[in-house]
Amino acid sequence: MHAFQTSQKHVISNFLGSKLRHKKIICILFLFLFILFCTWDQLIFSLYVYKVPTGLNCYKDQQKDLAVLTVPDYKVPPNSIFFVETSCRHDEGIDISKRQACAYESAAKVHPDSEILVLFPSPISLGTQSTLVTELLKYPNIKLVHIDMEKYFSDTPLEDFYKQGKLEKSYWPKSHASDALRYLTLWRYGGTYLDSDIVMIRPINTMENFAGAESKTDIAAGFLNFNISGVNGRQLADEMIHEIKNNFRGWDWGYNGPGVVSRVLRRICNEENVLRMTPEKCKGFTVFPPSAFYPISWRNWRMYFNEHVSQMFLDQLGESFGIHVWNMHSSKTPVKVGSRMPYSVFASKFCPRVYSVVGDYL
Image (cartoon, rainbow, N blue to C red; front, side, top):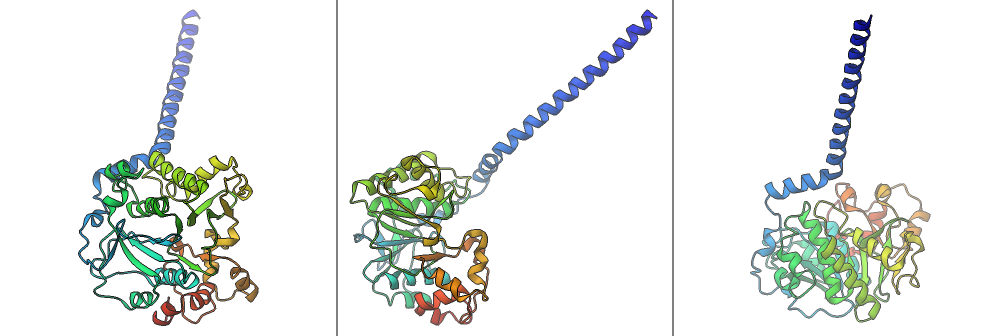
């Protein structure tokens, strides 16, 4: 009997020990998967940086067309409006899309007294001009400008950031170059930055120190203004540029663009709810509601391309300063010239020169 009990205890002990080992293995496996999940972006980013050559080599190529203006040598007028085009396809002639051209024209048309600077970090040539570029340059306030990247970052808070190759090592180098350049440009000159997938409807150059909310939780970076001649605007521009310098994440697509202005304003305004941020809380900085610049959220971007919207809907869009059509989602959506799609309606009115030469589709 005693031998049987001893044997039984041994079996039970082995069984319990086996269960404990299995639990430990499961816990260790779970912990490993959890750590892998939390660090997946960084891991993929590291592999990407190690194996994939940079997509920004063109930024180091020499600007050969000496007729092209170059910053920082060019003296930028106060209260200018800036676009940034970071692709590498312009050395044989400027290659922009129809919708980019529409954005540039709408800004020039709505702001005839402001200089509209389209900034290119890659070399550009004005020798062979497309029809789109020819139409744009009929506006005397549109300037197509090359950025000397080494000079542009030199003697700024982002000098070491650039020299360390953080943009080249990014998972999205051209997108993150656009992020860094928009904040650096406003830090240098003040004025207004605009995304290239917008149509301007009403002038904004009489306002200063502003951005637009796209929701109650997020401030977007597609419309940004700083008046750096004032104390508040200068401080905000400094805060933004140091946020990029200190907290850049090459593996996170949105962290270095809209994430920058959202984080800085939450800190300065001491307010988490974007819709409750006021100039009084935010040192004179205005966060406009979504209706001002992002009347249609990215989740509903298809509404810009719906021919069956009501006139009331079009009238409501017309009360915005501009519309942002979420190019990441909408770029492949065809827009029939002459249609009642909201994007087509506003393009026909605010970028008429471009609209007249695009053919059947915009």
